[in-house]
Image (cartoon, rainbow, N blue to C red; front, top):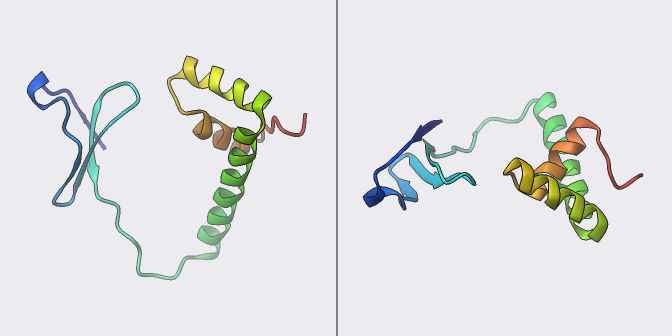
Length: 102
């Protein structure tokens, strides 16, 4: 993924152009990446397992955002780290840092 700094004339570029996607990061940087492509192959067992883990991580993050106390913790961390609260909750699930069971 390429990161570029553009002069103010092009600072608001976003969207797709051909096979490239232009977007802005939370820090305001312009990011250019290739358009994602769907695989035509059958997923392997490892890929299926990872997809299931990701589904469970999203369910955890959704539940964490529904709990006002846990959501406040994630929003505070998100503000400090410059990330999204939902993404932090999902990362915590993968790292085994479950705040809902405490």
